[in-house]
Length: 266
Image 1 (cartoon, rainbow, N blue to C red):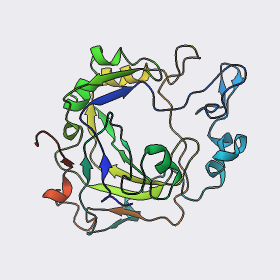
Image 2 (cartoon, rainbow, N blue to C red; image 1 turned 135 degrees about the vertical axis):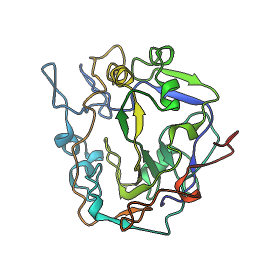
Image 3 (cartoon, rainbow, N blue to C red; image 1 turned 90 degrees about the vertical axis):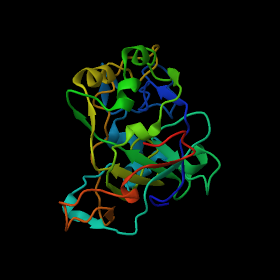
């Protein structure tokens, strides 16, 4: 599945307090939840990234996989691919995340996680500035953010256009990789948007006050929730912008997000 794959993305947005790990501190933890981004939490050992592939056989790819994520994207290694089509999302269902599954091959996210060419993850970068992206402004306002303080908290936002999350025009880089959390399945097409979104320092601070865990477990901030970089090895990094002409602006339909079934465009 390349960037052309059709991805699911509905109009009603569900906000989840934490998409990261549940570092379970206590007796008899669920083995599927017993991991973290740090090896030691308040004196308790919890498997951090170097141990993920050792403590659970189902997570062996975290240790021995050859297409792991994230990777260091060096622009000099990006190959210009003029045949990369524009990004296209289709609407439907009950929730939207930036993790999408290939509807042409799989019936649900769980099956797509285990199968080849199953997932596409859109990655957007943020830049701390004096103003905020309009999508993030609504997503991270006080009335919303206080309702999703802990893992599994959810809050519905209606009539929020996904198009507002993306820059007016942009290029992207894509490569074949994995989930960046256990089980580290190598079923992911990563799509990295090359223009950053603006977020205010207050909004960034609000995000870091959210907990990766439910209220019954130890508080673990969303800050520092990134896996170390993995070797790129012989994988290709492809982009839809020609590095030979960096002065050229991204113009035309190939450099915009296309949302099928959206109520309105920009």
